[in-house]
Amino acid sequence: MRIPIFPLNTVLFPGGPLPLRIFEPRYIDMVSACMKSDSPFGVLLIRHGNEVGPATTFEVGTLAKITDFYQGSDGLLGITAIGLQRFRLLSISRQSDGLNMGEVELIPPENPMRLPDEYSVLPHMLGNVLGDLGRLYEVTDWRLDDAVWVGYRFLEILPIDLEQKQASLESSDTAGRLRLVDALLDTVRRQG
Image 1 (cartoon, one colour):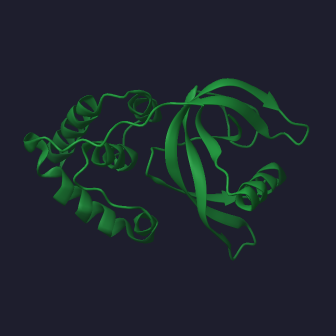
Image 2 (image 1 turned 135 degrees about the vertical axis):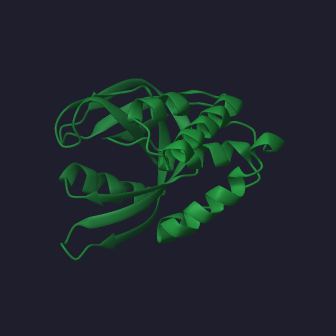
C-alpha cells in the first residue's frame, strides 16, 4: 500500500481524533487529493527533525481519514481526521513537491476486548474527561466497554512523553497498556 506520509510531533492512535492546521502547499495538495479519492494518509511520529523541515520518523504509525475541514479565521485550512489502523513503514520516498510517500504494510487491528473487572472505574472516568474535552471527541464512536479503545484514549490524553506513547502504539498488548494507564493514573492521583 502506498500512501502520503505526514510526519508530526504527535502520536495518533486508532479511533482517536487529530485536529490539524495545514499551511504548507505540499500538505494542502495532499489533503485535497485524499478528500477527492476518499483515501487515508499516514501519520508518523517524528524521531529527529521538525514538522516544517526534513525529518526522520518512527516506523509504526496510524492511517488517518479526514472527517471534516474548514477555513480558519486566519485563512489557514483546518482539518479533523480520525485514526484508522496501525501500519509499518517499509520504505519512503520524497516527491518533487516535498511530500513523503510511503510503502506500508497494515498491522492487523487488535480484537475488541472486554474491560477486566479491576479496571471497571476507567470507563466512567474516561467518559467524564472526554465529555469535558468537547467537540473534538464528538466525532468519535465511544466504545467504553472495549479495553483496546479505552486504553488508546487514555494514552492519547494523559500527559506522558511521546516516546512512551509511541511504544504503546507499537505494542499489541492491550493488558500491558491498561496496566500502564492504571499506573499513570495512580501517579496523577498521588500528585493531586
